[in-house]
Amino acid sequence: MSSARVLHVFKYFRPDFTGEGIFLERLAPVFQRLRPDVAHEVAVTATACPPGFKPPAGLAAVHFLGNGGPAGQTRLVGWLACHAAGYSAVHYHTHVDRSFAASALLRLLRRRVVLSATLDDSIPALMGTYRPLFRPLVRLLSRVVSMFVAISPRLFAENNQVVPASKSAMVPIGIAIPPAPSPDTRAAARRRLRIADNAIVLVSVGGICARKDQLFLIQQLPALVCHHPGLLLVLVGPVLELDYRERMEAEIVQANLGPHVMFTGYQEKPWDYYDAADAMVFASREEGFGTVVIEAMARGLPVLARRLPGVNDAFIEQGFSGYLFDDAQAFRAGAEALAADAGLRQKMGQRGRAFVVGHYDIAEVAARYLDIYGYPAGAAAA
Image 1 (cartoon, rainbow, N blue to C red):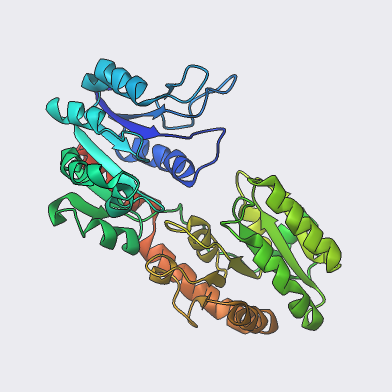
Image 2 (cartoon, rainbow, N blue to C red):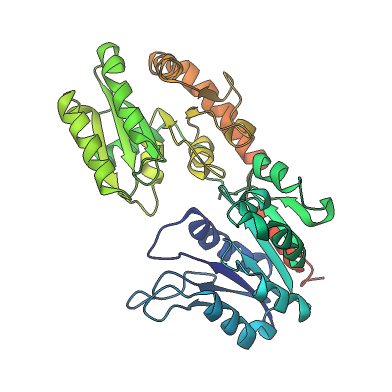
């Protein structure tokens, strides 16, 4: 086993789906390629070990700390007390060390402690989850963290309200850049998925739940179908809230939208659905980043997304690579423009892909994390 080891701490991991967990699974093989001398492991506090579990590629081990239930603060601190000496850096991808006791222990052992903000968990937001009496103490204890990482400009700005510049970094989500789509890409994907070649396909990727707000998309379809009877909304993702899915089904039945909506369930690799689509639509009301949007852009799709200030307006340029909407009227106007003009879709898609290629390559993102962990890419070879 490598003597250089980094531990990544999560509350949830497979088979519970979280964006941060999926992103680490994609980063792990890149870490291994850039620094094969550094081993990456995972510790999980809430998810129970599934039967027959094997660590994903690039991860040396996954430690499920709960014994039949979520691991509490005492269990986490005790486990790290026994194992911390074996790691040079510990990256909390969620704030599970609420007492900061484990982090303090790690710092006493001169280990690097990294804490991520990925959704609504910037340091000011986290302090708001503690009682007012304890907030000054929490702010003081947070100093034991070596580096605070935010994945969006909004979270970065919030962290910078209380975190010194020397301990604050913004590292966006990265993706593996796919080859540029060929003239036959769309037709081939539609043949595999049995989607009509003349359909206008809007794809949306994400777990089915109120936060992602796919019901909003369904509610806009009747007005769009009137002008584009071949319109098809493809919803890719697992059902996270059963009652919300039932509300969507009721809306579909009531508006007679059955032929215009496709549920695919969870797809490990949704690439065919991107390739078969004409545009990406995304109605989520809260995101730390929105990885699926840049995935779609990288495959040449124009995007129509709910405006999330300081998040997706960092990579969607209004009217250039897509549209940002604030209400139903703006959504329908953007969808109508994209549905009616194939040339516009192509131009926007090309512009968006170029931007993602230049800013969100996963290899560059992995190198930035390795630098934060103390293992700069290329240093091993040197």
